[in-house]
Image 1: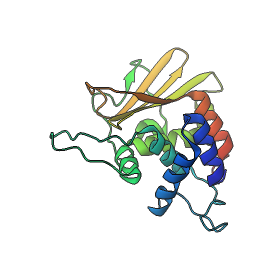
Image 2: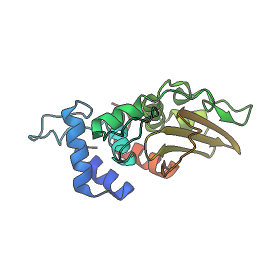
Image 3: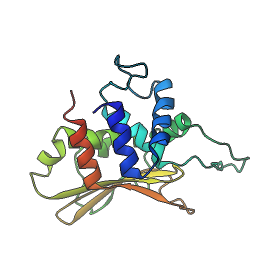
Length: 199
């Protein structure tokens, strides 16, 4: 999957104008948060990695509205790079680290991750390399990622045979939820297929 392919995919999946996604990708690339290849002046021929895909998703999922600080100071507008870094760095919430069925604690990398970015990367990698399918022993499973629109929290969910586990990062019990973006099981599976096995 090239950078142009990724921009097309994310634009269609999130209903975000193509030019907007391309601008996000340009800014991420300038901050060395998107792989740059040797083909073309803007590196559009570079093969995209899991981290690249997650960074562009976060840029689109977390809006650019002013973010009011917890301390009540005047809100500041975040750049694309700043908001992606902030959400990637969200730490595991002790109150929401792993919840759901008491006897269902999946031994998978994304449930052991310390930050939201590492967890989403690991979930997409597990879909790309087949780890999650092998773990589920080829039974039907469902996974999803929920991203709060201001980037206050990220939730990863996994369901297998009516058992559910949820891993939370950031302020998962935030009282003022605005909107959420959910990466469905089908979207994650399709993206993993288009990215192909990790090289």
